[in-house]
Length: 347
Image (tube, rainbow, N blue to C red; front, top):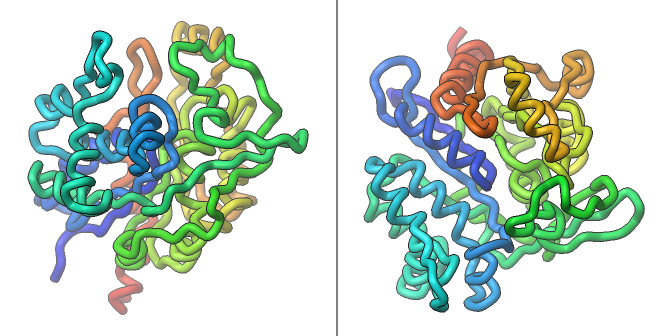
């Protein structure tokens, strides 16, 4: 009998790679907390930085988030991180580009497709998992704001202009909805297969409108999630994000997911430890605050809240990879094992 779980993790940005970094140590490990198959489904709507330049100049899918996932799942992560994340300086045409992005661009040209390039890079580096872009189509984000205006593109929506502090960013109206162009984009077939075979599907952590929802507004992928018999988990962000989730509580994040994709979540992970007062004060200067929560409202949305001590503090608050993975497994032991037995026809 197969040992370990089939896990699918969906997202983008630094959140997905942080999660993968914690989960990879359990791939084919001994004991109850073992992963038989780990799949990352990565958003491809990034338009900023090196990824944006390569996307505009060469018409390729943005490689940055995929690059981060490859590094996170690699055995020799420390060395590979230095190599893949190396950025060229000086006044050359390569300035600002990471070596990993250029490598994926070259492999796309050699193999003939971005999907095959990711597969080839993954095999060469013997990563502990599989990585699929959520779609192979050239998709762009489009946000409709509550004042009726629109923002087009990931950079405009997130306001992530290089070198600009959150406190100095121009404020736009609250986001009412997000969509992709073209609206009928299709997911990668192997991504749908992975979702269908999963025991556990994890959405997030990451920026709600530019990392999490871009995958969920791909209609066939959202439908596959709604039909899945896996335990479906959403990891909520710890801090609000200027331009995307100002004044959002945990239940507001969850409501946005349900409004866009339907009920694709069974359990929501919420950080149970308040950051230190100096960290909170530093974040407040940049218009960021700890995400509050109302347990009753989360349950009213049909989702079970689950608390964990999942953060680490330095100069910033970040999800802690190891603590996040441990929380996920404790959560699955509590809510997922019963589903597993039912699928096998056991009492």
